[in-house]
Each structure stands twice: as C-alpha cells, then as structure tokens.
Image 1 (tube, rainbow, N blue to C red):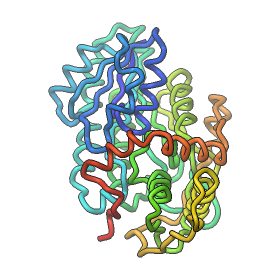
Image 2: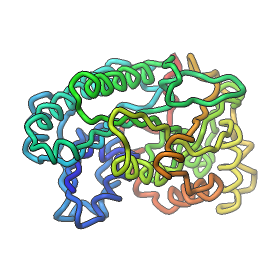
Image 3: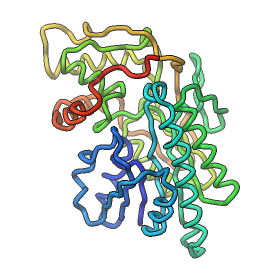
Length: 348
C-alpha cells in the first residue's frame, strides 16, 4: 500500500507514520511543513527506512499538493495536518483558517483531480480519511455524549476551523464522489505530544517543581484516548470504513482536568519523590475564554460496525506517558529551547 500522510511530524501524525512505515510492505509519504509542533525527532526511528519519505511542504500550497499527490500516486490519504491548540487559536486565529480550511480544500482538490484519473479498480479502493475532533460538537452538560449525528456547535477559532474542514470533506464526497471518511476523536495523550497540551505540560511542571496552572476550578471534563489506540482505530477505518460515513473515536474515559492533574502529580511523586507533594504546586488561574465544559464520545458505531474499541486503560496509559517524558529529556528539552517555554497561551 502507498499511504500519503499529512502532518506526520506532529503528535498523532508521527504515531501514524511510525506504525505504517514499520511495515516494509507500506510506502509512506509524510507531508509536513515543520511548524513549531512538527518534530523530526518524533519519527527518527523510521526516518532512514527506504519506504519512508518526508516532503517539507505546506498543504495550503495548491500547486505543490497537486504535484505531490500525482507523483506519489497513493492508495489512500490520511489527512491529519492541522493547527490544533485552542489557546493558540485564541491568540492568532489566522493560521488556523489557513491550514485547517484552506489547506484541507487544497488537499481535497488535489485528491479529487488524482482520483478521477485512476482506473476503476483503484478508484473504488481509494480512501481519503479526514481526521477531526470532538470539539466541533461544542459543549455538553453533565450528561449525554456526542454521536455521529450530533449537530455542530463549535465555540473556539480552532474548533470552528475544524468544523469547516469537516464540512468541506463531506461536500467533496457528496458532490464529487470522492471516497471520504471523517473521523472525530476525543482528547489524545501519549508520548511525543508537544508540551503546550495538558498532560505533558503538567508532567514537565511537576518535574521542574514549578507552579501547575489549572483553568477555573479544574472541573472541565474530557474523554481521554491513548494515541496508539487512536492510530489503531484509523487503521481499522482505513481498511473497513465506508465512504461517506463518520466514525467517532474515543477512549470512554471521562475525567475532570483536576483529576488528571492530581493523578500526574501522584505518579511523579511515586517515581521521583520530593520533599513536598507535587499537588501543592497546583494554582487555579483564570479560565480559558469560552472554555467548553464537557466532552464525551459515543463510540458505539465504530465498535458495532468495525469491531474497534480502545485497548489502553487510562491508568496504564498515563503512567507510560509520564515515564516516557521522564526518560526522554532530550526530546522535550529541545522543544523548550525554541519559541515555547511552558508559558500560558490564549489568556486574551
């Protein structure tokens, strides 16, 4: 199989690339423009393989995308490239519109022009997997869960740009017949995640003995999904998913932010004891503007129709994640030597 992956130097994208490039029977083209969150070190273990290629390019560059897709001639496209951090979207929404909307449009057009010229058998087998987020659905109250038919109510510049890209992907399937499948996932966590996100940020704050900021009272709830489970779900969708369908992917693990923070503190205390418990470092700070209260995913469709379900429980996955950051100081220290140093973003 020839697989084109966008955003393959990012957190989820690099996990996808590592999995598929490890298979000598799969050729992988990774298109990534190496933004602040794109880290070549995240794919170092497979970067020298003959079946792996990285193209340094912007998915919003229409001409480059047309040429890249035509030259590589993929059997499938896994589209993960996106600006993804809500706080950054509050500070600077323009790049989110460019990458998430304009970039998705450019890639869909390139895929469509390529796909329409394929012979019938390859055209029938081709897939375009558009990877999105649960944040497009907006916020839940104390009960209920998002299903594939939940109306969209995005509330941040990030989620609005992703909602728009979802609509574009579905429109190219409905109007042009491009075999698009949309997936919406819950909060991912695991190794190689850029430390602006909650779990790596708290882990590194614990290790440094620095104050741990918690928005509001920490009672916002998220559904946590281990990144390797997400990659397994995407592989399943790629093999068995039905064009025109949407599949929710979640970890079935709802926890408040404060619960997650306290659990990380306890793990670090156990693995690297200090004079004072790390929980004493917690500081409640002003909430994120427009902060959604709760996300939860109904994943009954992908369970029932494709036979996928999460394999990693949160306790085990979180411990693996914390231990990874403790043992890979060089990876995250190189990140912190750049433009980001664990400061708060999106406080406008």
